[in-house]
Image 1 (cartoon, rainbow, N blue to C red):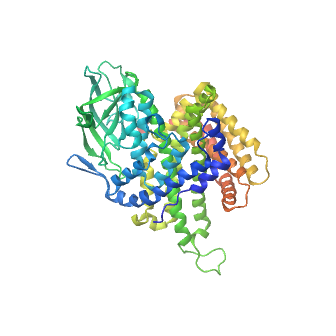
Image 2: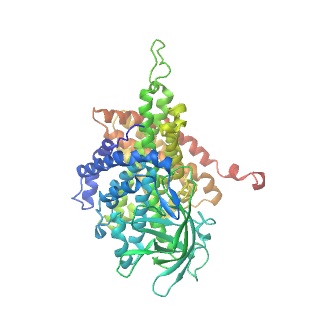
Image 3: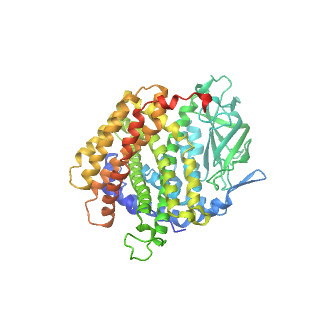
Length: 582
């Protein structure tokens, strides 16, 4: 495989010419951060990903994690790489400074996640799940729990995991059976078995902090009776050192299609000691703090896999000689000369670069939601992030998987052979469409919940923002063409949105997946319009942006008409066949 090349030049373009990073930081009073600093941070992160993490990707996949005498062993090099990652400060990048974090903008965190996912998706889950746990603890735990756990989680000395799923309770968490009994001293005895627990155990050293959903003895049925508990692998001894093994164990490791290096555990809690996080019976609200963060993270995993697969496929297409060009007199040519190969590569690149921009825009609004001095502006940004979260999770992972398949296809038969690495990308990318809420669930969340935020005002405000940007692009040529076609796609999206606000469950369910993809294509078209408008120079990067923007507008935005027609068809043909006829 080729060495991974971090996309720092693209980050620099987006920060300085498209997203207005310096102005956004100034608005938040962050005079300590500018685009130059951000690029320097990303360059250093990229070096670590390329030099330390990518070389472990294939060996980690081939070796996998193993459970030996009740202990999880990760592949060779993973523990040392994680300690190097933490010691270099990457686990604390966006962490709260009050607990030892660097407090840098979330856009840097999200793009770090992209590079880590490109280099080694299994590895990236350790840090990503830890960050999600810190956010839930920071938002909902007592001050004592925050003081005891956040500094060590943010520093990377300890890691985190989320324990939601049970064998009979997946998406419908109201069915879970894990129990928590008060011990009379402020702690609880947590019992039950959880499955699919990524990073549930490992051999990195340090504590592993599980956030576990369970029911109190008097809890009401359903999701209204779920509480959240912090359950660490090690408890404090009489001296304050965390050396006492808690009553929890790894029953087995899941045998998975991909992410083999990531230890996905079955965990048994046998009256394990834990502490309540948030209010009793309000655990789902607390867990959603972690889950929403993780959904953005999972979307970025799809983006990262697509970016890495594109690099490998493009390198191969430049070197692989096969077939002749349209000029029959020419000798064998690189397959990059063939239109179909270019089509596949351009579809991947058009997604990656628009997705990277949309992720950056969303991350900037996440910082606004947390830190803007005006409460109204915080509310606006919070609504926009909530609206975009299911889109980023589902669309980025759908496009990410499709991109991995396109890149594998470029390799032909070699793409099916392990030594080239492409089949690993396909296997690894597939899980991102499933975990943290399947993409069908994300689509339903968008249609049934997010379109109705503030009575529909949030999505209307988003459409108005997109339209305003598109109307402002007046230049002749590619920018105006991209803006014009995106505006037409936006009109289709708005027409599809109105009947879905408050729609019946059948209508919403039949339309949801197509609607989310339509929404994502419009959002990416908006990003391409902005990038094309910014690409006014004569350099290679700007020329490439204009060409790819043109390709996206002509060859990918055209899908919006078919999606709109499918949505408009309603649920009748989907629901007509009786259940016993399947």
